[in-house]
Image (cartoon, rainbow, N blue to C red; front, side, top):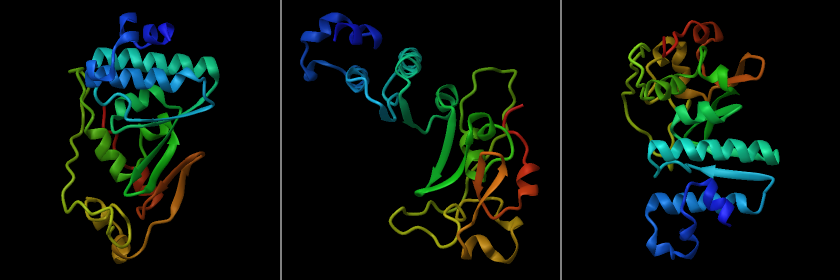
Amino acid sequence: MLRLLDLVKLPRAFAHRRPRQLSGGQKQRIGVARAFAGRPRVIVADEPMSALDVSVQAAISELLISLQRESRMTMVFISHDLSVVRYLADRVAVMYLGHVVEMGACEQIFTPPFHPYTEALLSAILIADATVRKRHVVLEGEIPSALSPPKGCPFQTRCGHKRDVPDLSCERETPPTRHAADGHAIKCHLPIEALKRMEPVFS
């Protein structure tokens, strides 16, 4: 237990504290320690960094990576923060309204071609490096309800590219999952050639 407290950067005196004596971020770190205590084969980590400041996020990221490598465990990491996902993940699945709209190796997701929703998520990443130029992508249109999703493509109410698809297919038909490259799947009506012409978000 004391070793786990060390790994998540909490004082050993916390072994005697009650939950009511911990802050939200401290509780989150205790949750990470508890998840790894039994050396599981698979861990589902759902937004484990959401209540942590940047310095603690870095420590927890290193902890997750080191424990995953030591135990050769599988980790399913769920997050809206694609900068953390890029640091941690080998393979990435981008989901929208319960649909996997893009899936591939990490480098495939972060370089073209990519799904229009992935493009918007990448544009939302905060970059502190002034030498990196970022293309700004703004999503417009109605945010659909998960309880009553739109017909056709789940992203069609907010997609700026659907005008490039003929016959209103985006509004009528769920797009097929197609392969842009080996191991890289995209669920979109846009032709693969059009997806390959998409510009990088970062340069």
